[in-house]
Length: 343
Image (cartoon, rainbow, N blue to C red; front, side):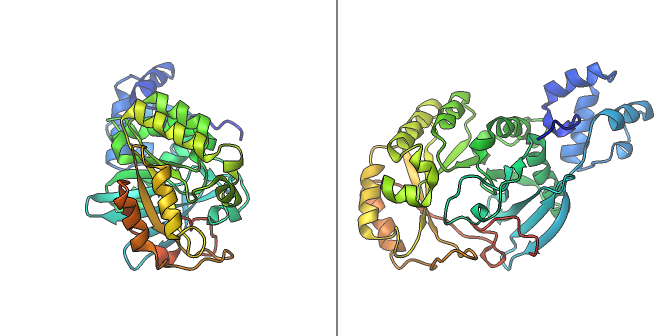
């Protein structure tokens, strides 16, 4: 991935003030420009009416403000919107905009394609293209906000790609959307999902960003998890649990363990009991996900054991929630994103 020209979405307010000064702009211009971008959703410097003509020319010559194009857009019966975004080099990703009682949330992608090979996930069916720059992740939120005319108050990095496989760009993105002069999105309104790259969990914990960490678990033994999630061959369940315990120690944030309930595979009551033992002393909660259908992957929806499975976890003192699935009819739900050009 070759280095791009300076993109303004790569920088926090303080970074931008220094950068503007280097290019002959007054430091106060940074706040004005950020206000146009994040609050007014204006992405053309020439339309920023409180910026002088001379300064606009400097901005246009030195600071890219390009956003991805909306290649495709689908709207679910429940109001969920799935976007297929195309960047200038033709790399594509999918993002999902979801409305909840507490506000509007977006699920963004961190890579174009995914290397992890999880067998139940649609993203594993498309070849890895490249990492996304931090500004390209931010741009997904801005483009969706512009198109929907909605205020997006929460973000989950749970789309295409493994965020911790693109760690530096992920952290840049988090710092930018967290700044008060931009989205002002607090860490507790942001969730990062990982399949379990253990060293990066420790590194991320040491940043103490207060971001919610979501870990894709999906199985209770190493043999079975390795069969569906190749990452487990490198970082087993025991090492993953220890890393999650460290994350709680550093951030005081409970880790969410994602568990896609696959009928006939990992949904037995014995699985539930084993999971309860595994997580008994871990400060966490389990997010049970009724498995979603994925083309070319054989799955059966709606395990009959959903309720008793959750009941066993609760009886053993493990907090559990059931994922409310949005956008299933447009393949926008958990595990269904994959850069479909024919959506």
